[in-house]
Image 1 (cartoon, one colour):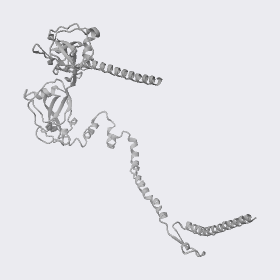
Image 2: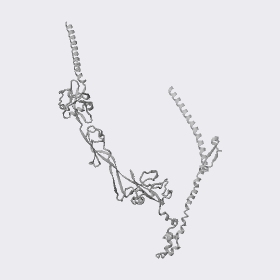
Image 3: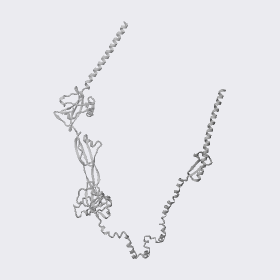
Image 4: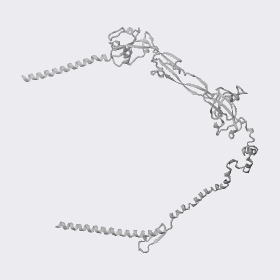
Length: 499
């Protein structure tokens, strides 16, 4: 009976364990089946038609007729969100929970299609309904922001625009600043031109990139680059004047050299044919000279179409045009024959001794009583120390300075250095050893040194031969002695083994 009871107890225990397992499995699967429908609910976005934000606490429900058709979207977390559980930041918190948000154009309200350029949607609640997770909002007009462009002074407004949030604002066109003119201390006129550089942001959170999507007020200030306009002088190479203002072929002119003008104004032959050169000359403050122009390797002609490249020092520059360019003031001229050249026929006489004709007049001067003595030594006026001049004849020793040729003679004395080669090519001395019957190889010794050294070498050679023979005999004696020592040692060892 006890055995039967034990068996029944085991059976009941097994059945109870099986029931517990079955009940536990059923409960788990049932709980999972309950949550699954909630996780599978999709998200729909709706826009309230009447534009009124409703009070939401997570349990309120309103008729579908008050909303637009739903548009699919996606949330990061499917949790209720409204003003009650998020506080004053509920609008920003709700938008931050969006993965995808439909655009305004996707909603149709009462058959009207709203443009995103004027409206945006204010989302105010996320709640769970029986069919979907609902995200509700209302249409609101986007705020307007001001975009202002100031001149470099920061107060002069060049352009001001009102732009809706998210819209794109056009940048102000390139502003311009008037050219500034004046005069320096030396009377030279100067002109400063200004070019637009960039728009500078007037706030840390302001940049030109934000004009593509305006989200707040923006302000910019103009910046300019100042360049002082140079005055450059040019020489026309063909010698032909340009009578009016116009373009210029660079190959027809030399390179420009900077200078200055008293007034920056255009002057040419066409304006005043009679006085234009005088006006230009009077207006030049500082013009470069001919030597300042690089006319090397250029075929330059004067107003008479003559080649002047080999006689530039006999010409002057005749300036005939002042013209304003985009990057400089340009002054042009041609080479004209120097007016002083015709008066230079006396020049061939002057180069000889221009001052000598004046010397014979010196005796006529009343203040030179000693001058009659001077003709005795006409060559001495250049040397006031006449007492030393008689010694100068003794100075012919200076021409003796051809002593330097002695130095050249010393170069001839250098044969001692040339004598050095003989030892390098000494005579060959042959010594025959008659006393010692040595082998034919050692019988004759040849030395390439001096006579005295040759004898010493012969003796040395004999000694070396004897030393080699003795060394050879000594080597064999040592070998024999070692062999005897080994034999004696072996014999002694055997005797010891017998004993």
